[in-house]
Length: 520
Image (cartoon, rainbow, N blue to C red):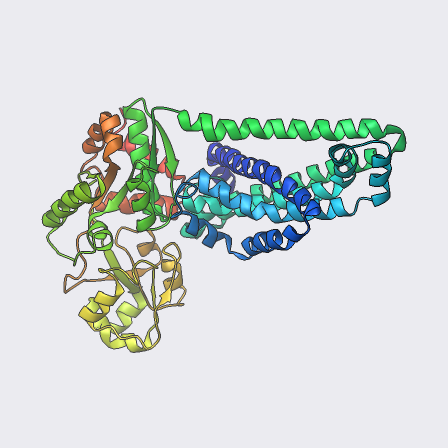
């Protein structure tokens, strides 16, 4: 079973490895072009050293996830995708390169430099023919450290749609699937080890050549040949990815939030667009919460994703919850069109409301069926909620007020991907989840009835940027044909197949399309 699991992910694994390598290579290429000249510069102007080292050392203290999150809102260099990911990796790669270049240069024997000058060499000639060749071992050691840092930090890029092996790691965490986590972690470790070994071997070889007096001229030529070759290769990769890659036409970008159902729905949109049009679809899944996806589609960093009507109404539009699904949908549709230039498409056919859950054994022990009935037990219970639910208009503050839920201890903040496991393992006693989640029956959890109709309707509605639909009107036709195609029970089954049967999202959606004759 395990062997089959890994085999089914081989095509995607190869794709993610290539994405990971591209991120690292581009970031390292730019970091080398910036870091080595800066390291040399501060040997000529020592007063700058403290300022430059203060800046690059400060960057290293910023948690990588915080760095990626901050860059989402930064103009020009920010947003989602490869660009902000590469920028963050460059920042993290600079310190070892600058530091080792500086140390390597100042450790060059002054007598050798003076001998060169006595022979009539200019400052530029001594730099290129004496100082850099003698410091190359130390410089490469810094590059080696930077590559290892970049390979590790690049896994976080998946959180902002940068791709790479982090996609498997984040998906595995959200699904509590160790196999998926290892599928992303092991190749990342291997890439780091191979890169470390390769640069270390190059470093030793070049150092040995330089120490050989009889081959001093040859060593310089070899060193500069290797440097020029590496730089040309990196320039080629950077140019292709950042310039030629952006010119690819007929490409639509579909996004998703960072939980299983959203990823499945993103894949559902992507596959239908691919099979019903000639457009190429780029997937930027696992982007984080509602607000990241909203900003991404609004700014056309993605072209579309699936939102929930109640979430759009309360979280994005900051409106008070209402129970009439048709009225809510129309208000969302009009407001999104007017405020954000976004098209709200018809519902895919199911509602995924917030669900307040407790363990089945507690429901039976205390004979609890509704949220109202649970209120008298909450003072002694521990609650666990997702980040958004704790602050949303339709989240915990209103729920606690309507149902008089009083917890002696403040609710724990729990990632949505882990929230059911935390409840099942008795770390908390009550959580807010999703009614269509396939893990609920498997983990023997009970959904409490929303007897006061607190939660608004949450219909799954595709959201697309109107500029995209104007450019590719065939997308609108395709998405409209998907209205009503996924029932609540079908969504639960899809979630179960991915979360509990460990099926590939691509394969699960593909089989669903064939089974329901949605694939032409």
